[in-house]
Length: 301
Ligand code: 6CS
Ligand code: FE
Image (cartoon, rainbow, N blue to C red; front, side, top):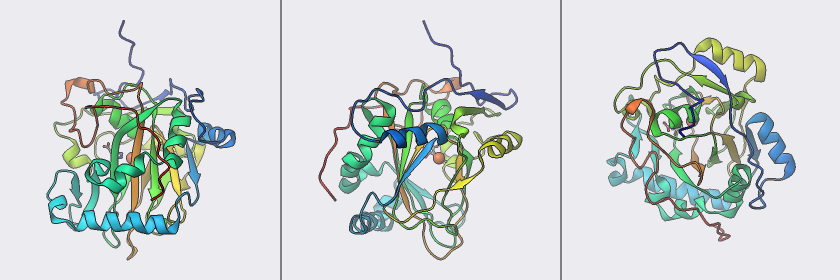
């Protein structure tokens, strides 16, 4: 029997707020990762920050890779490279764990992988990876959204059993457009109005216009949870639930704010068909082929 979908969205109906129907921390104890206190904080707030999990030397090594990739003309021509509309600078590069060996090793680094596995209570694989470069002066904002709303509707991710891991490669401070989150918002699903246009990703990855929350519902969430800036030094890591409401401001400082994102999804939550009969997004945005559980490594960078 097909289970009914508690997370309908992208229809002509008015926006709505729906209670989460899934756990946040899946208590299966598959592996030692997050501590009990970290699990409790993550369950309550929907995110968890671990300061300086990576050393400054490791950060420098990762930054060098990032710079190579974004300056590589061949990479710039690939569909994985998302170019800012006005400045023509690289905004994001997707699928970096398949395009680059250093990032490939990083997704299985036990320091991040085991926290992801312990929160999701199962083996995991990478649903999406990307670098957000957010250049100085011209780096544009990411408007408020729940990732799960997009992954559910455009990629057919069935349930809320995924998380993002953001590794800060530059210091993220109050000025350069750090990740903004609404603590506690992961317990509420905001169903969004408006049908998804064809090939929506070609626009949405530059500026999202569908799958954005209704302003009064956003206000309701922010009245309850407030807004928290995930500031921290380079090398710190933020883990956040797939349904946490988040966004970030533009970066008008002269310094880049660069982060790398890995989305870990439970091996038991693999993609199905997108909602509303739309075409699945490309493999480099939403993995469906050759899915295997990631094994941890303890090689250091
Ligand atoms: O469409 C997506 O999958 C992506 N878009 C945003 C704004 N955040 C998460 C994800 O990378
Ligand atoms: Fe996001």
